[in-house]
Image (tube, rainbow, N blue to C red; front, side, top):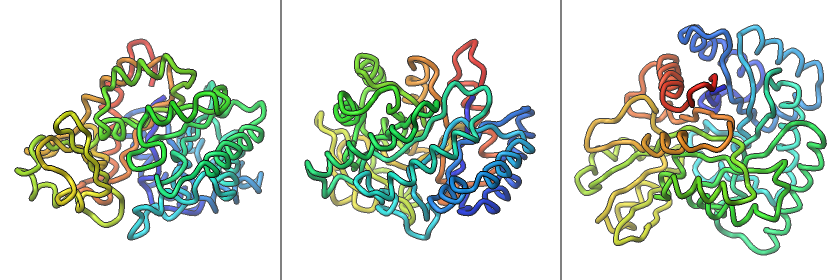
Length: 356
């Protein structure tokens, strides 16, 4: 089942979430002509806590999902809250995996997902942040984070729930290679694996086929794929005006440039003009709609996503995660956009013989 991630919607209470699902998810399902639609739920920390503590609320929420033909296979527990504040930027990486609030939130999500999980699911997945923003981070933080993951694993027990750590540019686990090095031998691979966000992968300029090979050869499984595309700029000097429309104040848009065989780094799009050489192509951490390309001289990295989908080992959860609709230039109709992305994903990402 391909899901779409509901972190695109701003609701941060149960009634608001249900209203957003009624307004968007239900018409998306109807437009697709599907009996069921997968939704990758984002629950803010207060919502997750309230549902975890109230069995009746969980039952009512499950009934609301079922009434709309919505199935849950995965949660996105990366943003703790405030994901649609006027300015999010670095706040999305807090609390870190060294903080007890991150542990408590993740355990709440485990408890909620175990009861919302679709009946045909072989397991449920929960994606989470790559430990923290890269600095400050110490050996003591490493030890604390290791114990934090162990605590969540103990809380999962015998339930079919897996954590999926999502490497992201600028974080402690910046790349897939960083995540594999940190996770291998440190966590129980039966419970903790990788969330492969293909926008993040593309931004890092990592070779997707080689990355998949490295994952297969490791003891870390791909638990979840966030199907996403980055903004690609072949000649940044010729695209300054076009890129200006994407330099918005809410989210962090890390930029990487590949020139001279080296990946150069800037933490946000406005800074890239002064911090990067400007001699090679740029990739920008701005999740772009999968089904449509921006006007030249801009493009997207859906080729990376296709390569990953074609070579995926097993059948991990696939979640379309274009959370940027509210900050996209000329975004258009959200129901139509989500439906078109899911149609594109079905046509381009699902292996023959595998139902979405």
